[in-house]
Image 1 (tube, rainbow, N blue to C red):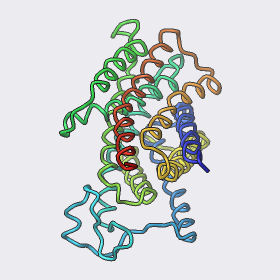
Image 2: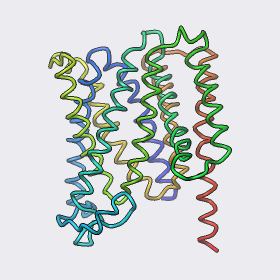
Image 3: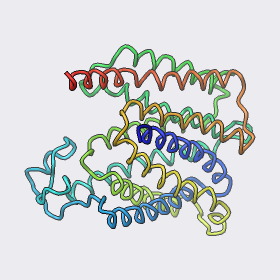
Length: 329
């Protein structure tokens, strides 16, 4: 089916967008670390079932048990690092990738959940946090400046537009009236940007297994912090069980699995643009489910942020198109 990949990515964006609504609702009952360790463990359990299903269907890609010192020295450079030659990576590679991604995911998810939880009730937390988080795509494009790749002028335009959009969305009444939640969610966008960059260094690792391990690492770190800094209670977790289940199963489990399947047959830039629609779905979900509303100025800010996210993908889109033309002669 020609449009299978884009359709699955659109569903992925919808599930991720609605997760902002779940996080807003869950934040009313449980504290950030508690919410995150609960959703992470549920997501990891769900992905364990996915891996089991893939194993029975013959689609699973387990790591090899051997360690080849020569090959593992190239971890992160898309070089095979196994001795069996069947999986393309070994347990050491998976462990390094999972721990690295899990630590950054832990930081990003905490900043995001803490930011959402700190918004006042009239701040349209789902919508604004969705658009601010989406800035991670602009940040990824900007970070290329420090990796030896010359950024396109469009990226600088995207950065400028995103700053104007952020101002309209977050500080139309002056910095003194800016929400602390905006600051935390903006910092979370940086964490997610680095998360994307780290994942890109481990493209030879099976995505579903990597996702399960990073969720376990993030969940364990969140549990330790919850026990140290919060007061997790079963009654509070049960009060937020529906948002937690949605975030764990639909956002961490189903959406990530759909993303893995869809990106195999979808142009990377098209995939990025479709997934950025999560910010739009977050705003729609907040409006429909939580009766949130944004002012006209805030809506203008959202539109500019979304435009910046799309523009940041243009250079990669042009590069992919050039490579396709060269490949076809």
